[in-house]
Image (cartoon, rainbow, N blue to C red; front, side):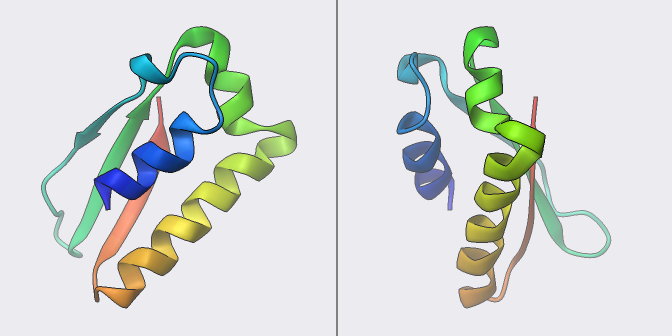
Length: 77
């Protein structure tokens, strides 16, 4: 899952070497939170107009997690 999120994000940003991900432990509902960190200048590219790219990233990640019977959430920090 982490590799998928990294590959999607690195394709969007100008500074792919600054893409990092922190993963939290599952909460009470079993949801694992992925915290995506990018360079300050790339934040707009990852979020997109009206959050459309961020929503698309979350949809793809939820679909991949659903195939593995997992629950995830992606936070862009």
